Image (tube, rainbow, N blue to C red; front, side, top):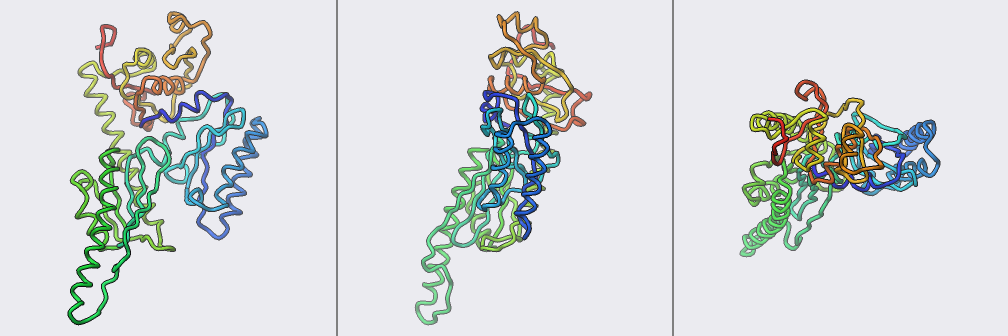
Length: 375
């Protein structure tokens, strides 16, 4: 995952309120239910010492769902609010949070947020009819899913029984229009897949539209295309089944990604291109050697020493003093390493602690080795 979008979090003044909350809004009593959830979150933050401007920012942002719009379609939402009341992160979660969070602390609680972001697996969801489609794109950056509405021409859209010499002409014109509209959708899907290397394309909606789109997408999109019969684009159509299937596919891809990354660490280790453990990973981050930082979702209670620069990081005060840093401070290890990953354009993968080899909290795949890299 590209985590450069977290830069605003690290440059904002702490302490921070971090919230991951269920904002599902699909029942008749949803407004009242959300108000009760938000009240509970607000009271929890206040009890932990969060100032009123911070609590007000959390409250007002979460209650936006009661005004409708896209926010009301989310199932989970993550907020990080800095000490001055500024919202430095506001992202959709993949589902109702498995690990709800409501904390006021000197440092933001980023790992549970990253683990649950909606956009962490690049994918495309297409809900099609014969006019066009709603195309939802998750780029894999961990940021909010973007939705594009594609509507083609509706002229001569219906096949009608006109009879006589014009009958075949009408049928042919309608079919041509369907194909043209499907081509516009397919082009958008191809662009997204090529740009983001999407792990899956979930195609739902009208059966004929799905057939036409499936025929027109390119090879890369076709290889990851998953079609379902349920769900539709019309107003009032059930989209929960589409969301549920997308959630299943995200989970499957997450599991596959965890396996792939751990296999990559094992393979890279054989060539000296991977390191494990806090001390070795910190040294590699400091030298911008890290290509992919792999963090366990449950870190150890470790502290690192950090300077003002993202790569001014060490396991001891002596480490950063050797870099010429005179104003180092202590930070939780996972946050210090995340900040260094941003500063060196490294990708970040968060995996279950139980999957990490030897129960280690961190590992890294390297871009290069040097004389000091352990073999």
